[in-house]
Length: 55
Image 1 (cartoon, helix red, strand yellow):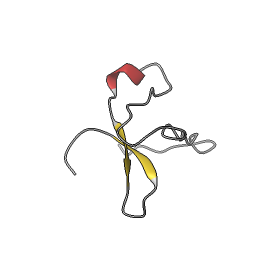
Image 2: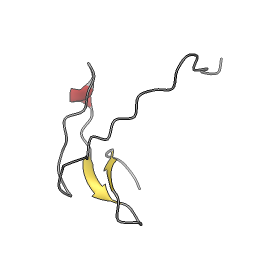
Image 3: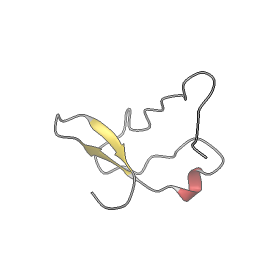
Image 4: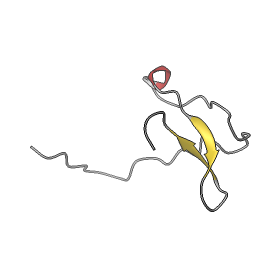
């Protein structure tokens, strides 16, 4: 059974907005405490949230 999303697109959270590189932002939602990523710069220099795990 494949997952199919119906309805409006999911909200985009820019959790790294206003943060510094290496910051650990608080994520919105009831399971936010289960996620622990950091704000890192991508190849273009844009600060983005990166979840823990292999790269």
